[in-house]
Amino acid sequence: MGNHNKPEKNFTDRVIEELIKSEERYRNIITAITDYIYTVRVEKGKPVETKYGPGCLAVTGYTQEEFASNPLLWIEMVANGDKDRVRKWSASILDGEEVKPLEHRIIRKEGNMRWIENTAVIHRNDKGEMTSYDGVVKDITDRKRMEYEKSRAETLDRLKTEKDNFMNTISHELRTPLAAIKESIAIVSEGLTGKMDAEKKKCLEIAERNVDRLGRLINEVLDFQKLRAGRMTFKIEENDLNGVVRECHRTMSILAKSKDLKFILELDDKLPKVRFDKDKIIQVLANIVNNAIKFTKNGKITISTGHNENVIEIAVRDTGIGIRAEDMHRLFQTFEQIEGDAAMRAGGTGLGLAISKDIIEKHKGKIWAESQFGKGSVFYIVLPIIERRGGVWQKEY
Image (cartoon, rainbow, N blue to C red):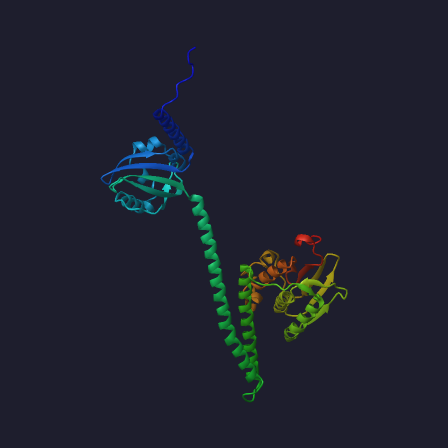
């Protein structure tokens, strides 16, 4: 019987077969890679042949055939601002220098700009002469975008910090001389430096009022900056709202009396205690009452409190000049002042009500105004009583 077994492959055949398989695997890997791989053969420091991997299409939009037919295509697609850097980088490689990866921009075939990273590895012969170099071009646009966003965020944080430091410095530099001026006025006004007549005392009172006004303006600007930067701290704890209203009434009574205005309290004696920042709510109330006194020539200012099962309410009513309907939407906007002679005389930064709105909203409350021009205004503040999970209040109001 004959031997039908196939003859064993000799060593050479097996090596050739493995090489073919290896080359096929390499080719499949290169085809699957989305990065752009290329090889440049070099003779005497000059490129003589370039082979372009299929990834060039994914990265640049151009095919291998388009690159092969136009040796200048690569430099042509480099963004104008980066051409000189790319030329110098390529020249350094041809000089046999080991170079670091180069990041630059290219214009893809369809016209959009992308960032790429080009890495080159030099190959040398036994004499140390460069024979070729391999390159890998990787699209890093997403990475650059993330780096830009991170850098931008860090820059904004730095600018905010610098701004805060600047505002704190300005605050200190302005408040210190104001305190000295106010103290000096008080010393002279009390007659400690000599006898005071009525005319001089009146002048000093005007000066003192303007010093106080300037102090309030400085505080408003600083508070506004803190709120917008999210750096104003709130001390939220259980407090008595009627007590806060009484404190505001005591503080503002002198100003109301100076204009011969009645200043009335109508308090709900069954008002429950709720959680809020006492100092911030006093600030809001003082701002609203101060405006009411400014814009009321005669009559009265009334602060009332009330509640239902969901919210407590504060209302500040005045018999002042009121607000035109077309101006109502501007009340709580930043740097807005209602036009008119009385408003112009009152002055201000236009930040008081905007700050008040921010403070109340930080308490998950609501503030608004109702007015009839020529007959007065009412400002309402409501604060929630019951808080549920997730910071959602029991009902809308």
